[in-house]
Image (cartoon, rainbow, N blue to C red):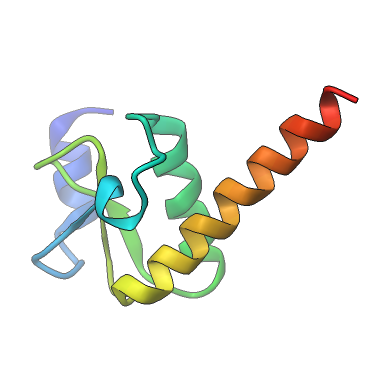
Length: 87
């Protein structure tokens, strides 16, 4: 996505952002993880988007604790599905 589109998306959000590594050290620089987290935070009603400042960060009105819980649950689900697919 182009820089101006990302900046437009984030303009309405809080001025600070969370790096995925702040939420959990298991992100390993996975952009799809960032996009999934944005999806799930929005699903639960939190205004959330990307930031132009860091490709591995999000801007959200959700608290750090709420974001961390959603992030951990999302990663646990991915690990569980991966494990099941190997059976």
